[in-house]
Image (cartoon, rainbow, N blue to C red; front, side):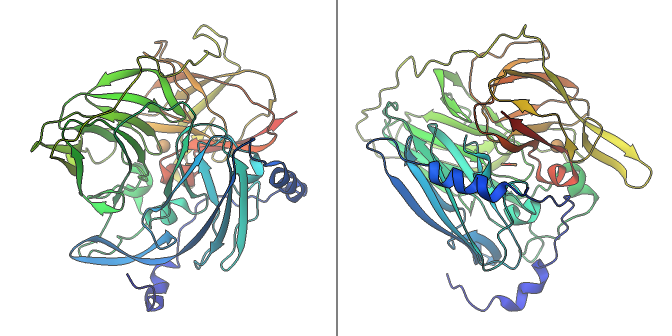
Length: 462
Ligand code: C2O
Ligand code: CU
């Protein structure tokens, strides 16, 4: 993989349609950053993990037929998987070698606001500049990182990576795979198709090149008789992955922010954009091969998705298994019950405007400014989807529990940072603002909807 000679193509991705409103960090932001930086200390016995990340151009050999110039972290697509233990401090020295400004958002991590990577809390990292993110890893789970500027373009071009945080008491499996799903919209020449247009704005950008870990429909391997832990991230801009592995049952061990209370057997699981799931996969018989696919799913877009392949799992010669999956994985104390009185209503909707036609809004506004929440005051939000399409609701920096969906209590308790909002539905969630004041946000994780303004800012105040 060579890294030179791509500047002649530079101009074709210099233009980007950034629909987002520009925000600026407040005057106190650099002081808040300094305090967050200094207060990040590892727990006793844990350490500081230093990672150097550089965003730069790289050739993406998606398929044998060709490649195109992508943007990646450290020349890798996806970026390097960062691993740590709860209580470690992650210190990321980030350098931007791209032609446009960017930031990094640590999706799902409950870290201080100045490290969250949004443009209300930090200055964008300009081309050539460096920024240090430093925070303690608070929770075990499967997380990921991605830019928080011009996301429809920067993330489609390859800027994302997984982040795995281990706890002290993890279930024992025979192996682990971190699988980051994505899709790309390529043109006939195998180059990234143009950005923008009505379809992409309405549906979100989906493509017919389906990837796992940056490879088009790859072959994966597992030993017969073994049970592996698969940590899966859906890094797509807009595609919902209704995951099936040969149609055979697997066990769901965890969701966005760590393990659930007990394994749940299923033969499919839905990952909205930015969702994660942890599965126990196997055991299988030698010689089997299983289709890793996304089953048909229609989220009321122009295009309906049929069942489509993402890869194939091949079962090799048998190896002994030492997997021990306890019947009880952890205890999650419910924050409250579905009968709790909501403290606010958040409405994901569309609005017709004379100037712009249809707009994606929250509480009737693009880039909504929502009321502050107070540290220590339990939040019970009714998140309404008043549109006919699905939208993945993502809350930055805090994990929530889903109390009910249209009045129905979910089958298990979990910690989430994203939940799919089905068309015309109300999802009641609960979360506790712990003492991390600052400016936060929630938004639709279909990147084009987020960029179009289906998002809100709010402050956490003491
Ligand atoms: Cu992964 Cu603001 O999002
Ligand atoms: Cu949306």
